[in-house]
Length: 457
Image (tube, rainbow, N blue to C red; front, side, top):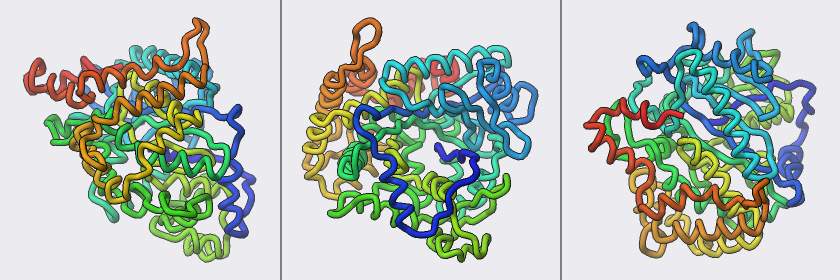
C-alpha cells in the first residue's frame, strides 16, 4: 500500500495554493540524477501452522523488526513501539496486517536494485529461520479471512480501518490481505512528467497482467487472476482509478494538485499522534477551517502525508509511482523496475511507448483496466485483439530502452536480463496466477496450503 508517514518536524507552513503546485516542480531532475526506488511487500507467516503472527507475541512482528537491527537498521518508534526501520537500503515498514515492506533507497541502476533486494531477503530469511517465520510472495493472502489477521499498532491504520467500510466494500481487504511491488521514478520537467504519467497509466494494465498473482481467496480460486487489482475497483472511488483528466489537454502539476485537494483526508499528524480527519477537506485546511484543527494551517509534511493517501494506478508526489503489480517472488521484484525503467528512462523508448497507446480513448483504457483482473493477457485491446498481442512489443521497447541506458554490472552485462521473467511469461502465454491454478487443480489436488512450500522466499 505504501502509505507510511515519515515522522518529521519544522515543516514549512502552507499559506497559499502555489506552494502545493511547487512541491511537484521541486521533484524535477536532469536525467543524470534520475534514480530508481523499488518497494516490495511480502506476507509473514509461521512455518509450523501458516498463521499470520501478531505484533506482540514472542517471535512475532515486533521481534522480527528488532532482530533486523543486527544488520544496522535503526528503529522508528510510534507511541513507544517500533513500527519501522531506517537504514542505508531505505526503510523497512509494516503494512496494516503485518505485511513486511522494503522501501528501497533511490539507486542509479537495476543492478544495484537487485543487490539491495538480495541483501534484504538474506537478512529477513536469516531472522525468519531463527523465529520459525516464513515469507510469501503473493498479491493476496491465499487462505486467510480478515478475522484471522492481526493489525499493527500504527495510528494512521486505526483511522483508515475505521473509515474504509464507509466508502467501499473491499478497502479492508486492500489493507489487510494484499501485497504489491511498485517502482518510483523521476522526471525532468512538467512535460516529461505528463508523458510518463500518461504512458504509465495506459500500460499499467499490462503490468497488472504480467504480474497477476492473486487467484485464491480463503483457500479457493476466486475467479480472478489479479484479485488484488480487482479489490481497488471498490475500495474508495474518491482516491483510486485511472484518472481520465491526466489525458486531457493542459494536464500538469496544477491539475494534479486540484485532484489531490479533492481527495478526502484521512488524518493529521500532530505531537506524536494521528488526529482523525477522515472525510474532511484539505481545501478547508488551507483556509484554516479544518474542524479538527480550527484556525491551523497545513504544513508541507501535511501535504506530503495527504498525497500518500491517494491510490490511483499511477501516483504523483515529487516523483511518479507505478502501482499496478501484485507481489511475487524474488526474480519478479527485479523485473518490475526493469519494465518501467526501460519504458520511461530513455526518450526513444518513451516516445515509442506513447505512440503505441496515444490513440486509445478513455473508454477503451477503462475497459482494459476493468478486464485485466479477470482476464490478464486475454483482456480486450483497444482497436481489437488482446493485451497479449502487444505484450511482446512493449517488452521489446523496454529492452531497447535498457540497452540504450547501457548501465553495466561488473561482468559487463546491461540491465536487459532483468526482463527475462516477463519474457518467459509472454513466451508461455501463462501469467503467474494461471500457473498457480494449474498447480492447484493438478499436483496440489485442491490443497492451497501447498503454496507455502512452493512460493515461499
